[in-house]
Length: 169
Image 1 (cartoon, rainbow, N blue to C red):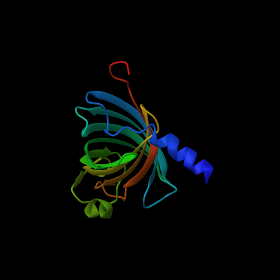
Image 2 (cartoon, rainbow, N blue to C red; image 1 turned 135 degrees about the vertical axis):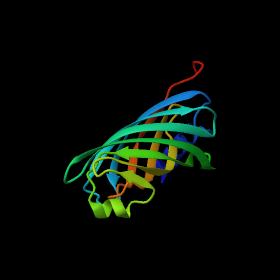
Image 3 (spheres, rainbow, N blue to C red; image 1 turned 30 degrees about the vertical axis):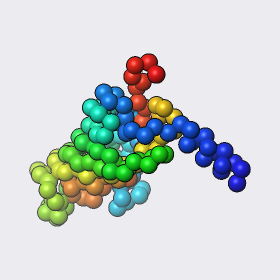
Image 4 (cartoon, rainbow, N blue to C red; image 1 turned 180 degrees about the horizontal axis):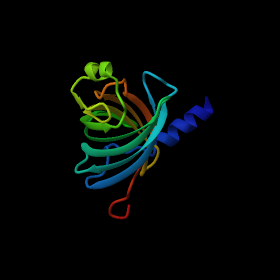
């Protein structure tokens, strides 16, 4: 119990209330897995730009290792704060995702709001993200990405992001 209180005290002294500083650039990496098939794992690299404290633009490039193939992905989203607590926040956003998975005709027909030619797909990306501040510049990020590109490519991500310090703080 004492260790829990010490860890809780340490974490609460380092929290930042805003999503990111206005004008900040943020980079990060995440591990990801498909919701439908936990064995399919991969990772992504993210670059964020925060024009203000409440929203951020996220571009991400990732690779998903499936049983059949390696699927590269590219996504762009706009995120905004939904809930902001002292120690963590939940953001939500939407954007576009493209991948190069070979989809069957049934998977193409089952896809919602997507365009596919069999080898490449473009669809909508809905992102629900949780940020937990570790210190002033590092945050742990967990994401649920609902992707409409077919083939059950929705993912759960876990990783770290780093906010570049502004104004020398």
